[in-house]
Length: 569
Image (tube, rainbow, N blue to C red; front, side, top):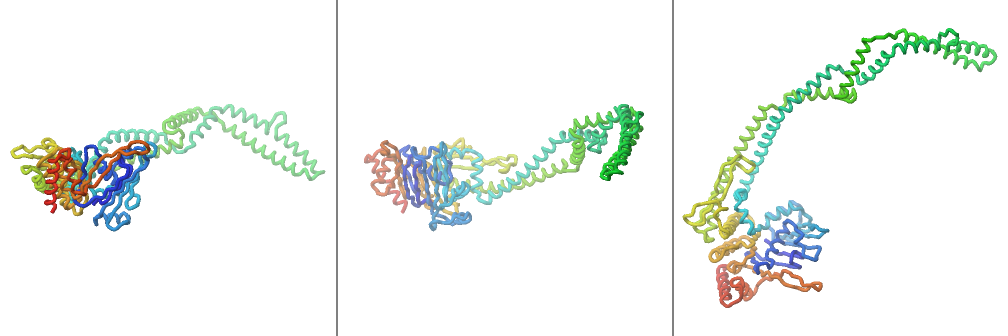
């Protein structure tokens, strides 16, 4: 139950504090006086969408604070979220909002603890329910009607619907997997052909060494220049070892060695140099023999040259296609082998996927059938309860049915649901969206809320924004009585223009606009006054009834208050 509402710098409200009572709380006032602003504030403090227009002009900060009397259910939830009570049996929700640049930022607290929107959403479901005129439009939507029916079925039905949703998700996943498999078959076979071709091409290349191309290019150079190498080798051999003129390197080193040996007889210091010359002579002789042997081995081989050049062309072509280096080509060959195993591996077959799909479909059907059975039981209960609630609302000949139409299974089950309605005797039953007038929709919505409220296991606040729009006379009186009945179990806050409803209020608030002087400028603000004195309430009811305080309107208002007093007793 909402106990206290504090509002600061919100829309046309500068500073306001309201204490609500249990039972029926009524807000009245001229059209445009700002009554709905109060309801907007309650909506906002429990997680409603923020909008820059909510901040009062000329200010940068605002605040809404609502204090509720708690139920045990809400207390348990707060403890689970580790939110300590600040006052026994009460809960305070605060929404602070600040203008930053062109955007309005806000933060919410519960008992002083910063909370997210998810926590506020849970609390909102346990604390209040706001019913506005626009909801009558939502009632004509078949999806919304199905949602209402499911909620009326309670936790058992909602849990079963969750099972259907989970089964549908598994079925849809199996269906998607099969579709992907079928769609990929052509691409898979094409890829398999390509991989097999590429593997065969690389296999025929007989790749083994990453440096093979470098070695072949060296061999190619040698084979292409055999004559040059022979001639140059012969020249080197002559220079080093055998020269017709006796000036070869070995001759010169031999002569140098003999001279040093003679010199060493007179100076032992030259022995090391002599040894070095001898070593050099031996190395030159060895190198000369190697070069001579190399030159003798060289032999032109056109066949081998052609074979080497053909192999080089092959390896370069393979490298351009799969490389660019031969090492990368070899790595690609190994990767193709792995991909071939994957493409030709056993894996999941089409039969297995189809079998999985069929099994999941049967499970979905089974859960959907159970959901349908429970929905039909719930629909029968809702039909009886709703007609019972509608009859006192000047609709004693009403007929209401929940019509089921089979459809393909989905996450919501295997049927579409639509509310059918006949408000008058002898009229053909038709969809609610087609036949119901504005006044009938208002009464239908009120009766629906009454049906839900009687099965709530705790008391909370029902808020109605002009539920009486478009009705008058007996219908307005019937609505007022229904609101009064609801207020015996739940706190009811109601914005109304009907004196018949306002007369039954346990707490009556008048909303009006006032012009004040602020910063040498005139500003409009919303003021709310609780009407306690009988005479003041009488005048307000007379205003609602006749638009003025003429004697006949006052007399009518007095009679309403007397009747209300008797009913309340």
